[in-house]
Length: 338
Picture (cartoon, rainbow, N blue to C red):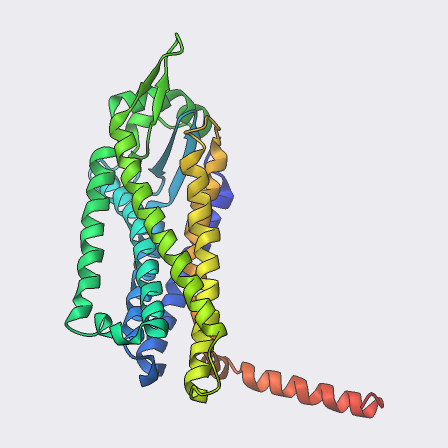
């Protein structure tokens, strides 16, 4: 059995959509963003550039995932998979990029929270205070990369544990592949449990960052939601309209990562602990992670009116919609409907 075709298809589809969508979004941010966005413009630009990077590292990795007994792995299945130097770097960078996406999402929500509820603290997103966010991002990047590379990489015990199942399912020798993942524990022939402390420590670090970012997103997102519900008519119409656009984008930017990032990886993380073997089905996580960077820029371009209007004009959609509406009105009038 080979890696399911749908996995490769989703990864290439996600890459092409994400690549062009994020390039388009970057162009819109640089040329079509009003001054009322303030520092948020640079945060959106940062996120779009990183999403572009994520889509590139995803296609270079073409990650395949497999869950077996009390372990799971993510391995490089691209044309670099047998390269002893590049493959470990690529797969580690891919896993690190996943973690950094969560961090950027959290920073995104922190800004929205401060802008809406704590405007007197907005200086944290203006120079020089704003430098704290790239510093935090860089520290997490180094920490996550080292955590994955040194605590969750391949080793002889893990190779022996996976050798048979990987060959049966993918016709690959595990020792030839570069992979990342935890082996939580091994159940011996006598029923004794051998805890793999190195892997457990690595996953505890991953859980801490993932849970912290999720709690940040959920709590701050809810606070912004409640604030938006109480916005009164004293707020300037343009400001209220902009906040509404950003709020609608924020709602989907909460839902999309929960569906495509947090949920599938949580299942992948937890199942080996409770002894649920996913096998090749674990590749559904790979599919979800490949599609996420393609969806996020589409959400932003749709809900921010200036971006949407500009794109519709460029694609001649405005004229088509107007023509269709006018023709429909004429038809209704002629047939006595109105």
